[in-house]
Length: 497
Image (tube, rainbow, N blue to C red; front, side, top):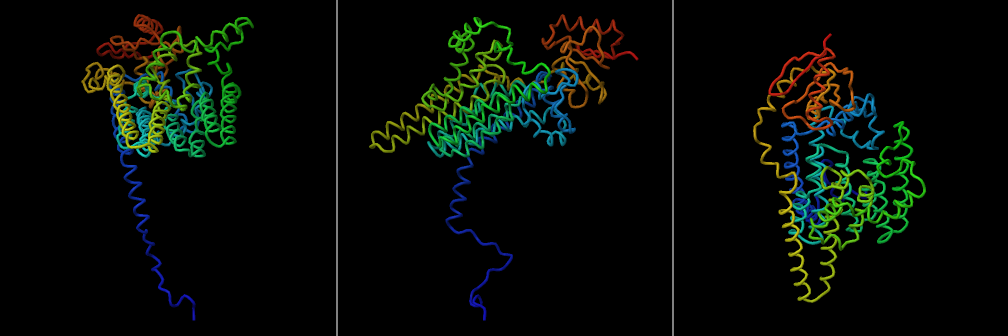
């Protein structure tokens, strides 16, 4: 007789039902995730509509959306990320070490369009709100989660990145957000795992990984933190001076903007070193960037040590002599947004924990202070909103006859053709043609593309002035090109056989 004969066996096909405690935990987690997920969904829709409408109105550019589409298109075809917009056969891994862009290749094969990159970026920027809102919800409360989600989503750093096409740093923003939320909750290993892929996003982000490691070494497991810091620094140095130098025959060219060309003597090097403190806060655009960075949380983030994780990015930007790095425009500040808002949540969480041990008056004062901090942050987000690109949103739904005319002209160009195009026409063609920018790299005095398309009515202004673009067309005509069609100032030339 079997010892199991007196026991009732569950049916083989009937899974064990979760107990009441498990069901409660599942429902609690679902409720906890609902608000952050709703914020992510709302931001994703907004960013997507904003980006797609800009692209449909031809407000995106070859530099940089066209460059990245060429690279992803090349990955999707099973090749190295070649971007002919940077030069014939140019391997983009010799410009920046961003192999993470290859993860977009499967999606690009399904939908071969620049819109694939823009939608992916919209998702990545929106996704960063999830860990920040979830942490704020757990540590401070629902109002904090809503405020953080809104203020992050409307922040100028993200706005400036969304409006400036696509860039690889879109991957870094959610990775940092998940890592910093884990830091705030003292989940040290999770923080490291989320931060490690930063070294695949861009070569300088190894230093940000190192900063996260030093934070962990100070507040958590020292060995884990120091090992992370060493790995981050080593990864950046290897990527800059070994990997990039091996791909690009000119080496890591961005050191030139840091005074790294090696031509300066010892006296000049010492002079630069002594001037470094002032160089980090001056000229004036650097002051503006620092003020806007601190102001988006009502200067509250400055009270958290987490805000120091901004230093690696601010350091290389402000030491550089490239003035575009100093400003609030473009995409360079996007990676700072999750850091600043994580620091803000950290301050609120510390205050709340400190107040929990006090009497009723202390807790009441803490709640009042918290409401004031959240109110200031929300107010700043609303005040700053019209100063940055989101103010363009209503205008994106206005019909533009000039765009309609341009699309008619672009449709004449056959798939697979070689084209030299004005900067804003480039990303309209990179999905189906081999494209270079009119005037850069400088193809004169002899043009080789089969087609040339230029906008003489609304010129891009880069890399050539309106006058320079007209002169380029005259040169092309002198070389034997002929005008195929012209509509509303959009001129299409074809090379004579």
